[in-house]
Structure formats: C-alpha cells, structure tokens
Amino acid sequence: MGRGSGEPRTRSRTVPAGPTCSSQARWFLWAAVQDVPDLDVDLVEAALLTTEVASNASRHGKEPIDLSVALEDPGLRVSVHDTGPGFDPDDDAVRGAGYGVRLMEALAAEWGVERRDDGTEVWFRM
Image (cartoon, rainbow, N blue to C red):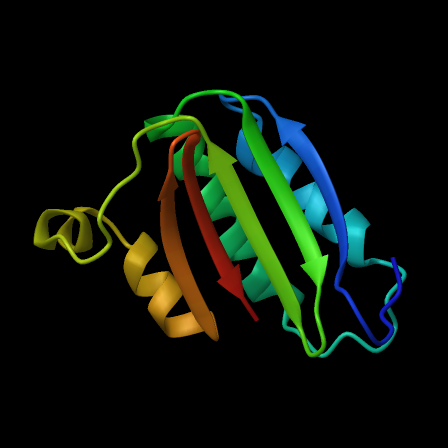
C-alpha cells in the first residue's frame, strides 16, 4: 500500500468483538503500513488510538466491526465502524468516563464520530 498522488490507498478488514479485537486491530494497522517508507506518522501513537477505537467498538458497539486504514497525503486515517448507536463526544458523561476522548484530542491531528443509518464510525487522522 504505497502512497502516490490522487485518492488515498485503503485497506479494510472486519475484526471480531471480544478480547482479541484490540490486538487484531493493532496488528492490522502495523501490517497495513509496514511497507510505507516515507510515512511521517508516530505509529506507536497511531496504534494506541487504534486500540482505543477498536476496544470501544467491541465494548459498546455491535458487530460487525470494520476497521479501515487509509494512507492520505499527508498522513494516515484510521476508522472503525460498527452497527451500534454511537455516542456524542461532547457529552460531559462521555468526556469524564475514560481517557479515550482525551487521548484523541491529545494525539490525533483531528478525529470525529459520524452516526449513520447503518451504525457509527469513529475515525482519526495523524
């Protein structure tokens, strides 16, 4: 999955909910970018955020959980989509419930939550 001009190059896969969801998502991220020599992204931070969004989808969402890793110019976009109802990231209860929102705000260049008829997508860019 190399970078070039034009559309982003994307890899996707479905990961199961449960105890292996986060590790499978992390390993998929590493595999998706391992052959990209000029990627200027902190992959440890990207893996941490990938773990966060995948574990939240596993814990609070509904299967299937679809993970997408896209190389963009510049950077990387990771998204997780599940068929659950999602959450409002501006809700004070969500912000105080854990470290996920704070991690996104601290490490991602940008991030968001999109609710659709078929579920919820949580994404971030680095």
